[in-house]
Image: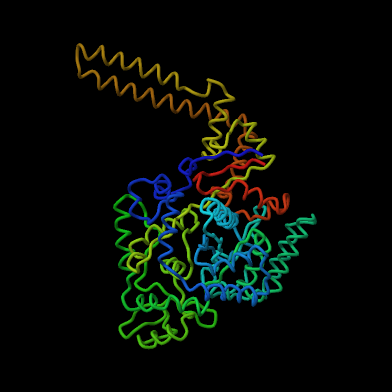
Length: 531
C-alpha cells in the first residue's frame, strides 16, 4: 500500500472559497468562529461550556430511536450515548442524506472522520469526552438525490421510492433493487455477508430512516458511532423559540443575505440563497414548503393555509410538523447538541461559512468547520497502468487530454515538442528587432508580426505531430483515457459516485480499518491510496 498526500488546491476539485478557508486566507477569517486547528477546538470547547443543552431529552430520544427501530447499539455506542449525559461530553457531527445503501463513498469517509477526530481530541483533551454523531437528514425531500447508487459503474435505481420526507419513505418497494444488487455482488463470502445485511436492514424495517440506521450501525457501530434522527417532537420543542422568530421576523433571510453580499464582494460564490421563510410543513409524510401570505402563511400550492395564531399553536403543541431547510438546519443542530465541530464536504462548508452573522444573532457561534477527508483509491491494475505511463499521484488529476499529451511527448521524444524551436525563433526575432530599432523603429512592428506568424505555424505543426502520434498509438491513448475515467467517473471525484461495496467486496471490514488508519482531517490533505 502506498499513500500520497496532495493539497486540496492541487486537485482542482475544490472551490476558491474552500481552498482559501483551508489556507486561512484573510478573506475568510470573518466567516467562521473558531479556526480549524487544535487551538480552534480548545476555544470551541470553552465556548460550548457556556451553551448547555437538554441532555436528558437528547439521550432519551436517541435511546428510543434505537429501540423503536429494532437496532441494538454496540457496547461502545451505548457507552457513548450514556456519556452524552455528562456536561464534559461534546459531539463531533456529520450529517448526510439517506442515500440508497449509503450512496457515494464520501458518506463513509465523513463518518470515519467523525470517529477518528473524536479519538484524536480525546487524546489531546483527556479531561473531556467526544462522541461521533451521524445526523441523518430524515426530513430531506430531494428523493432524486438519494434513490440510487453506483456499483461497478452500474446505476442501482430505486424507481418506486415515492415522495415526501426521506426518513418516512416506505421500504416496501425496494425488493427489485436488492435483487439487482445481488446480481452485481456475485457469490463471494463478502458478497453474501453484504447482501444478508442489506436484506436485514431494508426488508426488516418499514421506513428508510430505520433501515439506514440499522445498516450504518452494522457497518460502523463498533467504532462507537451514534446515529440521530432529528425529526423528533421533544427535540424540535427545544428549537421552538427560533421557529417562532423565523415565522415572525425572517432573520435568516436578512442576515444570511448580508453575509452573502460580503462573500460575493470577496470574489467567491454564495452556496445557498435563503428564502423569506426557511421552513417546510410535514403532513402524512409529505413535505410542503411554507411561504408568507397577506393573511398569514401557506404551503406553496395552498394545500394548507394558516393564520399566525395557528402557527404559534402548532409550534407549541406539534413542533415536529415544521422542518428546517438547509439554512435553519445547522442552527437546529447546534441548539440540541453539545457540539464543537461539524465535519463536511466542500459544498457543505461553503454554506456553513454563510451563517456566522445569522448564528450570532441568536447568541450562537459556529462550531469548528472541518473539511472531511477525501480519497482516491487506486487498485492494482490501475496502479500498474499509472506506473507504465509515468503518472504519479499528482499527475493523475490533470485532464485526460493533458495526460495523453504528456505521455506522447515523453515516448515520442523531442520530435513532438517544438519548445526549443519556439525559443530559438523568439531569440532570433528579438535580435532582429533590436538591430532594426537602431535604424528605424517603425520596422519593429513588422518584425513582431512575422514572429507571431511563425509562432502560430510552430503551434499548429506541434499539434499535427501530436495528432499523428496519437493515431499511431491509438490503443495506448485509449488506455490512458479509460484509466482516467475509471478513477474519475464522469469527470468527477471517485468518492462522489462509487459505493463502498466495490472495495468492501475485496477487503471486507478491513476496508473501513484502512480508511480509519489514514484518516486525519487536521492534516488538511487529499489522500491517494494505492492498494
